Length: 373
Image (spheres, rainbow, N blue to C red):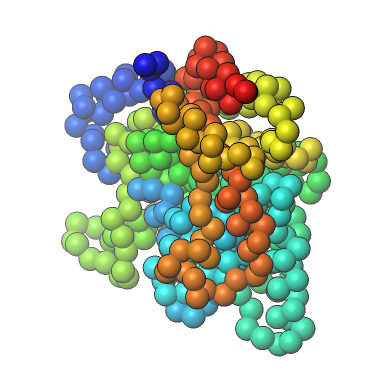
């Protein structure tokens, strides 16, 4: 049997070992150390944010983001129904209400027309406004954020960006030309899980241009402890700190990120050329106004399940994308706006191997399996 081909695994080919050795040699292995500060500083510079606060996961980053905007029980947050569950759960942590919004088919992200229509309708009728809109940039492709940013600005609604899957993705043209995802809303959130385009083993980052939000984010992620020798705390905080060891990995990975993105884009281009002519196949989104990072290669096909079975039988890891959140038992009664397109995408989308370390031979094997007969 051929060796297994992973879907999206880390690539540790830079200074990871050297920086980890520094952590061990200096005993800075916990949540304080020079690599945490360096990672925050260099990450902020890379994405173009004034501040970055490292934390334990992308989910933790979102949870803190909702604390920062003072999300209260009963408040509503508009969020896409087609997303990983971690985009929605932090809303529930604060006993607020997710309003699950359908996707649009050009990018698979939240439909901005539905967001604008819902908010303007609330304004006309004098109903309570949503507290926030959470825009998720799925699979490395920027969402259509301009209309959402405009309507949020108009009514003072917080715009939160879940950029967990889209590090390296930017806008091209328009008002946000050159801007990195996660730097347009009030707060951006990123993930460094093991399957992401770069990893710290597990970790996240909060970005903002607001110094007070950055200060409070750091405060909340460190148990809301006050300065000084005494153990005094002024509010409920969290142990959401990133360790110096994890940050050391992050610094090494960030150094290689441009090369990672270039390799992901190269892999995507080869798949596009090989699979685009197959009847019924819809290639991943590639909007002219976006520069995607191509984190995960996910196409649409009515043959999704047979293809999935064929790949798995030949030791090739592949997966469907998520079940639409409105189909999950804990969110079936949540308010929603549409959902049919999210269900269509969930039924047809297939993610295939696209690791940075994927060899030409391995990719050729995946292509051969999918184009066979």
